Image (tube, rainbow, N blue to C red; front, top):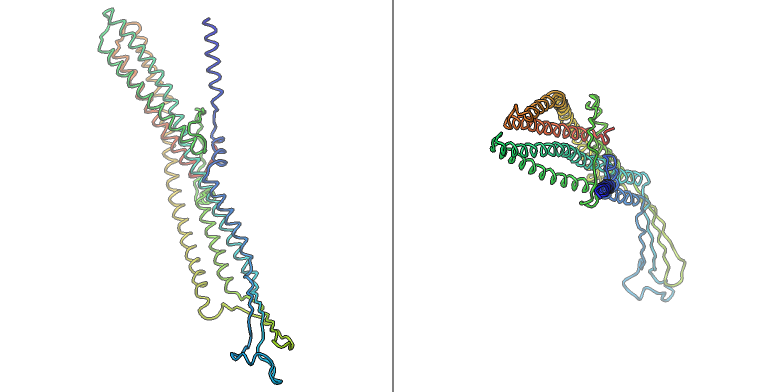
Length: 419
C-alpha cells in the first residue's frame, strides 16, 4: 500500500511539472514581439501613415460652373428685336489644375518616411519590454536560489531544536539555545513567505509583458549565463549603430530633410486649363473660350511660409544632431562605468564562491560534528550557522546586483539573447 502511495505521489509531481511550461528568455521575447499591444499600436500607426501617403498623388477637384454671360440688366435686350440681335449667353465652365509631379513625389516620400519612425520606435519599445522581462527573470532566479538555502536552513534549525530538546531533557544543554533557534526558524519561515510573494510578483510582471493571463503558471531555468561583453561594443560608433533611440533620431532627421524638400517643391509652378462654352439665346453660333493657367508661388510674399518652414527644418535637424551626441556621450559613460562595476561584482562573487562560503561551510560542518560528539555547544553551532547564513544572503545580494547590471548593459547595447 505504501509503495502505491509513493508511485501515485511521484506521478502527481511529474504531471504537475509537465503541466507547467518552462519558459526561456527567447520564448518570452518572441511572445513580447508577437502579442504586446504597444507594438501592434505602432504597426497600426505606421500603416495609417502609409495609407495617408497615397493621398499625395491626388488632384485638385475640377471646378464646374454654369450661368449667364454678358447678360444685360434690361430683359428687353435679351431677345432679338426689330432686327437687333439679342444680347447675352448661357455659359458652362470647367477648370482643372494639374499637380506638379515632382511636388507629388516629394510629398509622398515625406509621408512614407514618417511611417519609418513608427517602425523604428518599435525597436525601442521591444528593447524596454525585454529589459523588464529579463530583470524580473534574473530576480526570480536569485529568489529560487535563496529559497533552496532557506529550506536547508529550516532543516538545520529544526535539527538544532530537536537536539536541544533531547539534551535539555537529559540535562546536557540549556533551554535558552532552544528559543534562539526557534526565533531564527520563525525568521527563516517569514523570509520564505516574502520570497513566495516575490515569485508571484515576478510571474505577474513577466506575464504582463507577454500580454497573457496574469495568473498563468510557468517555470524558469535557474541556470545563470554571464554574457561576455566586448570592449568594442562600448565605442561611440558601435553605440550609434546599435541604439534604437539613435536610429529614431536618424529617421527624424531624414524625415525633416524630406519635409524640407516637400516644402521647397511647393514653390514650383502648377499649370491648369479653363474651358468655357457659351450658347446664345437666339440660336446664333455657339462660342467657346480655352485658356491655360499657371500658379507662380515664386513671387512676392506667397513664398514666405514655405521658405520659413524649410529654414525651420534645417535648424531642427541641427538640434537633433546635437541631441544625438549628448545622448551617446551619456550612454557611453554610463555603460563603461557599469561594465567596470559588473567586473568588480563578478570578482567579489568569485571570492564568495571559491573561498569565503566554502570556508564558513567547513567551519559549520566542523562545529556540527563537534556538537554531535558533545565537544561543542549549541551556541557555538548556532553562531557558525548564522555567519554562514548571513554570508550566503550577502552573496545573493551581490549576485542580484551583478545580474541587474548585466540586464542594464544588455538593454543599453540592445542584446536580446544571452547566446
